[in-house]
Every structure is written in structure tokens, then in C-alpha cells.
Length: 564
Image 1 (cartoon, helix red, strand yellow):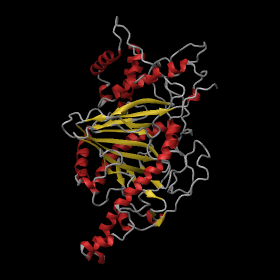
Image 2 (cartoon, helix red, strand yellow):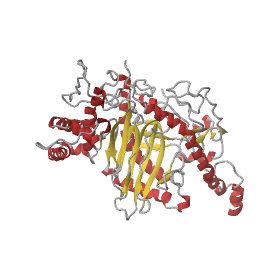
Image 3 (cartoon, one colour):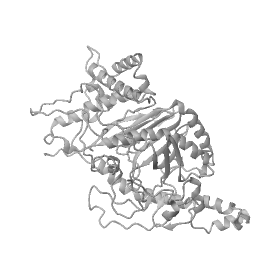
Image 4 (cartoon, one colour):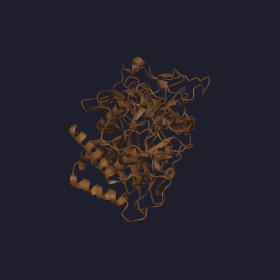
């Protein structure tokens, strides 16, 4: 049974989120280190992933893959892009360490290779057809899933209309994400008014259990007991693969409940007023129905480990210097099975809504950084992203990479075959690029939090007009644990408190003139005012730099290729 006690920081050490993502405590998952227990994927396998990704990034690709006429067109496109014409001189050889995805495809491209990839896509398409679900399909990245939802158009259009009041405000009130050059507009972001030990209030569990609707929180504004500060760990580096509790901060998830394909949000979404924006809550409930299905497939893959294991076996090499690449399997196959983990019941979800805004004066987005989502305190196991609207921008992609255990490679130190078979080099980071998903309006994708990801650069398609990329992110907390949520922590926004206190007809304060109310408000230290919340966010960002640096260092650990 899942632990229902909130994780409020009683302990010093906690499993990092990447380990959580690979080993949910009560699910049939292997316990693995943050350093991946799986070896690298061969260049041949990566080539099949990259070429298959060109198909799987197409809108509604699983429907198209069963149409022979469309598949013939794909064959022609692949041959044009990657086949070497007879009698033409070979292209200049690209050093393996400098290869991009297209170079890897060209290195292995043949008719047999192409037919295997197309058969693999058809195999997946027919599998989903058998599940009577031709909307959801595997994405271009193994272990990730997507849904192109034309039937969802009305829901998305409704939500976009409801979000306009959050966007159409004076510029000085807009919450531009720090250090983004006024390009990333946060409409709802968990770093603002987050939980902070030593400052945030938490309700008595008996009170929190009685809160079953988002608006219930308003009765408890300003109440609760202050969470104590966390003690510092005695030795932050006591165990190199265990990260310390990051700091005193945590993003707050909301409580979601799903039953019979209906979602109910049972506690407030941080930074989204539950009464003023009640219709947005209803719209998010409808949108999340599709996300939950995708997240179910992701968590199922996490459980059986299928997205981490190599499909192509690298043969043993008996002769020194002999290079034998793995062979294409005789037919497409998929390990593991599907289990429903979050199709019903309660779960915790962190919500983010943001827009990347470009205009003629600021026409290019430089791209994001490689990262995992959250920290051990949030225990995020998977993410679902809805691309609500893309307008007047060039192709936008979300790229992914995996880490691997270089000790799984059975070759002598500095053996050239390691580079030729796996494409990895000694003293370079132990990471492999595993593809990207193209952002498409109306598309939803879900992926495990064991992959690092980043948004690739894009720019205005027409540099004379503005453009944008608008998304909703649902970060799923490990469904087999429970972290402190908005059911436990009353709203911390001063503006919410001010409205409730001074508009209550039963309160004498509501009779005061506005200028008197404002004067009284200046003396109120809790809940937090916006300036305090932004200062808190800056401290959160600063305190997490060490955590991210250590975790990224572990993720990118250097390939040693030592004798073993």
C-alpha cells in the first residue's frame, strides 16, 4: 500500500528522482543506481531509433503506417535522403565522435535496414490498432508516448480562451521567467509561492484530510503551523551516489483523482485561484484525461524496464581488432507488457503553464539546457506536455538523451571497436542522444524522468510578425509515495488572503475604505506578497544550483573504458 504520509523532510537523504523514475517502490521494478545499470546502445540501434523517429514524428503516424501508399512515399523520401546513388563517389567520412543523427543513419542505411525500420513502425501501429487506440502511439523516443488529438480541438480552444485573462495584463505585472530575456512568460509556475521550510505553514493532518475541493483551502488562508527548518546533513558527500536534500524548498503538487475516465482536481493548483479561475480547473480536468493514458504507458515501461534495455545484442568478439556490429533482429519485437498504474485512484500532479513569446525585436529562442525535472523532494517520475498553440515559429523540437554504464562494455582500454560499435569515446560524457519529438499544436507527449531533455532553438518563421509556443506541463509525482501538497499547505498568496478577508461580508474589515485596507495590508507579513515570493524563487534557484551541478555531473559521468 502506498504511504500516505506527506514527505516533509524528516530524513536527510532521499533517493534522487532518476532512481525513483527507474524503481517505484511498490511496483515490479529493478532497484538501480542513479548511474544507469544498462550499457550503451549500439550505433546500429541508435540508427534505427533515429530513422524510425522520422516516421513517428509525423502527425497521426500510426494511422498512416498501415496505408501502403503512404509507406511507399516514406520509402522514396528515405532513399532520397540517405541512400548512396550508384557510381557516385562516397561522401567525406565524418568522424564517429562528431556524428549527428543523419550521419549515423547514413552509416547503416540499406534496403534491409529501411525495411526493418518500416516493419518496426507497422508492428507498433498494428499493436495500437489491436488496443483500439489509434490516437495514442509510441513517440520518436523510446519509452515516450504521444497523442495527436484532433478530437480534442474544442477542449484546447476553450482552455486557450480561458487563459487569456492570465496573459492580457499590463507588462509590469507579467511574470517573465528569470534569465530568459522576457521570452518565457509563466502563467502558472510551481517555483512561485513554493513550500519553504522555516516559513511555510502546514495544516494538521486531520484538517487537511477534510479538504476535498480546491476552494476548501480558502477557509484556511494564513493558518497552520510553521514547518521547521531541515538540518544540514553531517557530511554532504558521505555517499557519492546519494544527493543531500537540496534545500528548504519544494514545488507543491495538487491532488488529482481519476475514476471512469473522469478527472477531479481535489486541491488547489499553486498560483491558480480556485474560485476566480474555476473554469480553468474544469478545462484542465478534461485535458488531463488524455495525459493520464499516456502517463500510464510511460509508468508501465518504467516498471518493465523496456525503454532502458538494448534491443540489439552486440556479439562477442573473439579476434583482436575484429569489428562485428550487431545484426538486425529477424522481426520487430517489444519486451515487457502493459499494466495500468494510474488509470484510477488518486495521484499528485504539479502543473506548469508557460508561453515562449517571440517578436520582431526578439525573434530567436536560444534553446534550453539539459535537465531532469524537479528534485528528490518533488519525486517526479514522468512528465506530460500538451502543446496548446504554436504560431509563426520554425520547427520546435524537444530532445532527449540517456546516460549509460560504461563498465558494461567488455573491451580492453582504448579499444577502437568501442568507438566504431557504440560511437563513444574515452574521457567524454557517458550520454547518448536518443532522439527528439517535434512540437505540434494539439499534440501531447509523455516521457520518463530518467531521460534528460531540452528545448532546441527555434525562431520566428515570418520575422515581421510575433509568434509563440504555448504549453501545459503535468509533472507526475511517484504514484507509490506522497509528498507535501496543496492539501497540506494553505495558499501563501497575500493577494488571495486580502480578497478573502476584506470581501467577507461577515467581517468588519470589509467595511473599511480601500485606502485603509491597503494600509492595513502593508503591515501583514504572512501570507507572502509578490515581491517576497519572487525573492523566494531567486533563493530557490540559487540553492538548487549545487544540486543540479552534482546531478548533471553524475548523469554525464566521464567514460573511463578501464580494464575489467
